[in-house]
Amino acid sequence: MIPRGIRNNNPGNLVKTSIKWLGEVNSADSRFERFDTIEHGIRAMLMDIRSDIRKKEQNTIRKLISSYAPPNENNTIAYINAVAHRTGIDADERLSPDESTLCRLAEAISFHENGGCYITMGQIHMAWGMM
Image (spheres, one colour):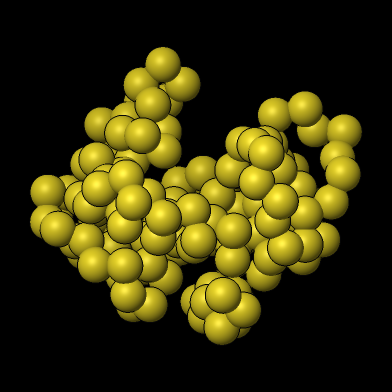
């Protein structure tokens, strides 16, 4: 079965908010955003992560994932460890909102959210170029 995040072209499983994302489409999904293409969904995730690092000072994987995937909904410690392992970035290392770091984070978050490899680094870099 294809994971919900991939069916919604939302590999980061961004929850619905008042933010109007490029490529956002109406959806019967009452909880999560839906996008017309996977690249638009990846772009939204990249922008969300970048904003969290820059504006909310969630500048470590531990801080970022603790907010992105709160303990009342997730095994946050396992999520932090998985993203740190997949990116090769220590959970408490200061994150830079540059292309390399954000693309690695997006890939690791998507992998964890969807239970496998459903997006490519090529798609992630294409989405980066749309920002």
